Image (cartoon, rainbow, N blue to C red; front, side):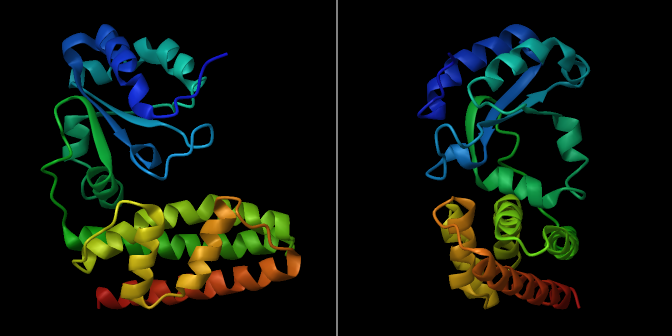
Length: 243
């Protein structure tokens, strides 16, 4: 049985050699990102996420990596994000939240740090924050109706949605020119302070996500109603930032 790494750094040498063997000089970088970069990593539960940056020639040959990708899935390594430098340079206006999070939370495994010198247009970032938050508000409303108010279904919606807010919150702190912590709970805490959100509620949401709490149906409905209200209030604040 494939062993799940207790520390993602354990697999850096092996995975580097495999991708160097596949792509050779077309391999620009291997970068670890996401929860596996720090204290949020939970062996056996957290995925290990890598970004594989290739040349324009290499990106056209990702079919060569199919076997390697499948092999590493057995050790909780998610399908890597395959990018080229050109793709990164030409999509900063479309995915600024994603790149900001990559830049602020990554570990170099091999090659060139293509994230280090990225710069961000504040209005592109604000627009994506507004779009993401308002979009998630619609999804959360629909999910509540689909759940028929059942606690188990609402807990699953929270587990799926809360993690995405940490990425948005990092971007919001950047817009407010505030320092961003590295750990999820600290990011959430800082954002709640800056935007006057209900910190106690978001701590409950994180506890549910991490399966530290399993409230019953009635309590879950109250928590979810508060969740919707806070997201709606936040969407109004982001809209106001842009006038």
